[in-house]
Image (cartoon, helix red, strand yellow):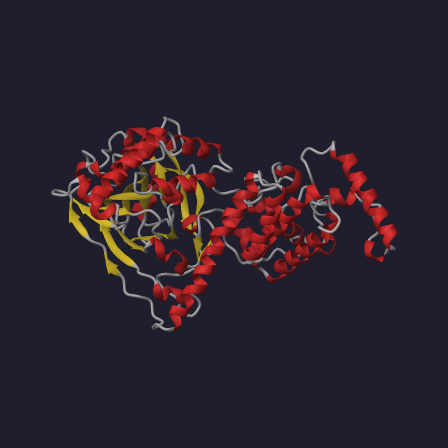
Length: 533
């Protein structure tokens, strides 16, 4: 499920090398809306033809105004004099700068400024999303913006010939970001490696490298697997069923051995009824949580957000439930933390015995994810979450109290075959349409191993870590879910948190706690039990 504390992503206007967004984006911060994108400011709205001399790099141009427009036309000794003069001036001014080196905004900032200026002349963009990340992504996909980014890349490469050595890390990082947005991850990875050669302690650059490494690994796997498609029938595979089993005679150890440790999904029957004393239907949830405010989300085609769900508005739970019952909404109350927002309901839930060893609930109170789950889902009929993978290698379960949900999911090994893209975070987005698979555009879909099941009221579904999945609500539904960490995914969770910890102090604190002797001993003990069983 979605993680409210998920901080492995960087707000689109606050990417690496922009530690003070206001200095580089003229007020377009992480809270920027589509209105902010269109904001006109004569000091920053500039023509694309002169973007280089009037962009976020204007400080360099101001400080080096004495340089000839084309230094290559000067005699060699004159060029050397000019270069030395430039370096002297930059060193003289360096003590007055708030940060070391030149500020080099990355691709999102450049695209935002370019678009804001362009809107003075044309504001047409066929994107219905209000989400800044999604809008900027689709702006960057236009042919005109791609040409703009290529020009920016050319200018940055030229700058490498005369900028100070200590400033080259910022230039290489900007080049990496632009190549990333030009769909050139291999080239971007080379640039970020050069940036890290000169600034190897910069956590933002390390984070960007990790994101690029994930994308490059996907592309290499796809290149290897495409040969198999040429030798196989180009059709989407039939789905296989998910096993159902009663919990009445299923011990905790049998559950772990047969499903958790094997990474095998399963539907558990005869367990949900014992989780609560009263029936959790729409009316009951309304009576208990109706006055609470909650953000509702909506599925947006083409979104770059997780599961293609974007926050729509904030309503009371009662209003949302009324709309669901009337069939008058497409909004989705999705992954709403009960311990944080409605503790009275959280107190009514008994966590099934199979999941009580969750490491996340054994950390210090107030730690990241300690109180994130269980979370509530209330959806109208017909609403879906798109293909997604739960964050930080966590497993999860979902208990359905009312309605029906159709689940389609894949093995973790199928991830590269589903064409994931790491756009703004380490959580991939997917453009494939599993309901209407396009094998011509996405031939590797033919090699996947899809599973499908219909979850009904009273069922509990276990989904192993790393499994891409999508969910369709066949009827109005009420469900509760929780992510969890145990010995089976402990090592991978720690690896993922190491990346998140580069930018998120709370993730760093959680990682330190999970890597403490106490949790290491628990993980090692459980692993030893697994080996001996």
